Length: 362
Image (cartoon, rainbow, N blue to C red; front, side):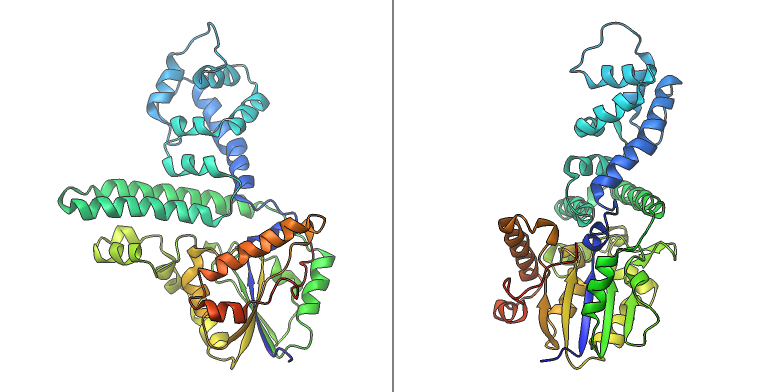
């Protein structure tokens, strides 16, 4: 049967397929090379004991440190030695190989924790932030009269710093198109009545492939770099932890939830009026989106609707020479979908099986 309406979910994997450096690991290395190291070496050489990025105790040790024997198993010795010796490349290699040392260096404890898990996806930043919120929520429930809101305010400030650093990093990336991906999208858009592209990325990569067409709409649901506004936070309001957080009636807990950021503009509303309410039925095509729980609220509305007839995943072409990995990554997508689609009978009915699924373009 011909598909009249298609909804495309575009995630970070779409940009990665263009070989853009948009993984968290790319940002992590960039932040070390272009922010941490320049600021760190300057602070150490000038004997600073106060700096917003670095712990006071660590800088104090660096300021009092002199020459003498350098112990290679002592991170303080190695950082001091590389900084004073202008051995910047060696310092980069050292910090990249020893991310755990950042726990003792950085004032931003959330960022330091993220460095221990740099090969994962962007949503892990949001998940890590939510886990910290749960810790504070549990403390507030156990002893509400002694809850220190300043610790929560500090966590939110740390998250905001990371958000701004991510935005600055992505703004400096050069975005280019790819002919194979363009051909792939043109093929997917063929013979459609309407296509609604929900771009979860902050980049405008996908929009460059779409000419002025009345049949195709692109919605930057999380904002865009071009607009200088991005939604970056947690987006699953369907679990018990979230309800308990709301019931605390402490507004600071809700500062970085997507539910409230969606109310800052009309993008979320437009998904409803231009697609979910407008279409009598539709099929969903997932391109580079991990279906992580940080977007569960929106994804649930799309995938659990009776109007959603089919969900298409794409087998990874970059793993084509490793068939077992192709199967495993596809299977992982079905695991993620099962956390969104609440009825497993419908999950089996909606998700297009592995054999009938197409390969991605790159």
